[in-house]
Amino acid sequence: MVFPSYEFDNAHLNYFSEKNLYGIQHKKRAFHLYEFENADLNYSFQKNSYGIHDKKRAFASYEFDNAHLNYFYEENLYGIQHKKRAFHLYEFDNAHLKSFSEKILFHIHHKKRAFHLYEFENAHLNYSFEKNSYGINDKRRAFPLYEFDNAHLNNFYEKNLYGIHHKKRTFHLYEFEDAHLKYFYEKTLYGIHHKKRAFSLYELKNAHLNYTYEKNSYGINDKRRAFPLYEFDNAHLNDSFEKNSYGIFDKRRAFHLNEFENAHLNQIYDKTLYGKNHKKRAFPLYEFENAHLNYSYKKNSYGIFDKKRAFPLYEFDYAYLKYFSEKILFHIHHKKRAFHLYELENANLNYSYEKNSYGIHDKKRAFPSYEFDNVHLKYFSEKILFHIHHKKRAFPLYESDYAHLKYFCEKILSHIHHKKRAFHLQQFDNAYLNYFSEKNLYGITSQEKDFSPL
Image (cartoon, rainbow, N blue to C red; front, side, top):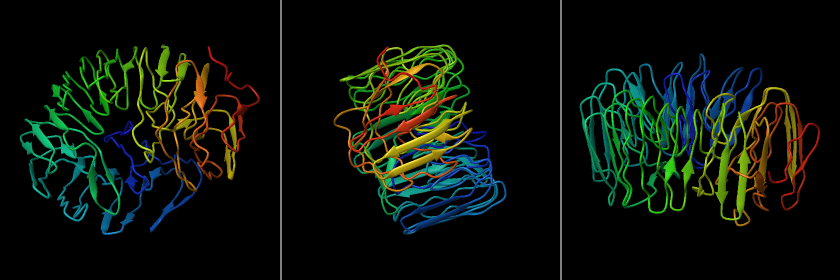
């Protein structure tokens, strides 16, 4: 899953930074990665080079059916075998991952999930990060906290204190720059319970998530995925984070929001408020079955209707979302939870943005393109500045509830090719999107969705 977050067969991928690379299995959702049906993706990311074949997804990393992923991230070396997932890390069938970031040491075994960690079936994770030491037993997931069956995680990052009990995962995401793990908030405290996937997603079967983040507290019940995505069957997540409050209903997915069947998520970012209805996926993309999204973000208001996906749009009833970071990138599949990615069923996307040109064909996903049935996207925010390079996606963007998308940034440069998903693009069921702007202007043509407020 996605940190946004993605829904995987047996994995959640999430994450963030330009320089972060991710590896995901075939038929899995990838973050900042694209799903191809018949295409090759050649992605160059600084010193990283990727070769992806038919039906692969990857965010700087790719999902393979039968392939090895060679991940080069300055001082990081990753060797991944068939059908692995990873967020900065990969899920191995039989593999060990050594050395994350200079001082980060991960020893991960067969079939484990982790954010920066992998899902194991039988393995121990030994994580040393400066003053942090982790002991993880069989079948654990974690980002940078891990899902434990019987284990405790103590203390993450110098000034970060994590208290994790039996079978807990926590979140907070770390951005890497040159193979270093950077932890967002120094004083973030997390407490996560049994069988949870935490940052960015943890799947809970029977557990409570107690998340303490300064003034935040989380309570998550049975079968949940937590921050930024948690999938719940029957649970409520209550998170108080300064001025943020979230209410999420049955069957929801969220980035910073969790997928619930019966639950409320209250959480996450400074001035971010989320309200979600039944069967919704949120942040920054949510899939709706029957729901309305009402999002108010400063001067942005968004209105999204039934069966809509959006990023940086979020599926809300009433919510504020505060963007995460300039360089946060997200991607998601059709009918999947995607962060910044949407699957197009029948549409061509023509995106022209200064020096950017996009050509997207049928059943393509775009970033941030959105798949709408009936929706208005209001421009994101006046003050949002994105510096995006070729084939790169960035965030923070926000999803609107009265359907206005504010231009992203004067200096956003995106180069997206055929069968690729574009960021700052919007996907339609049957429509062409023509986006023209030096300084962000949007023009939509055939069968387009109205850009006017609801």
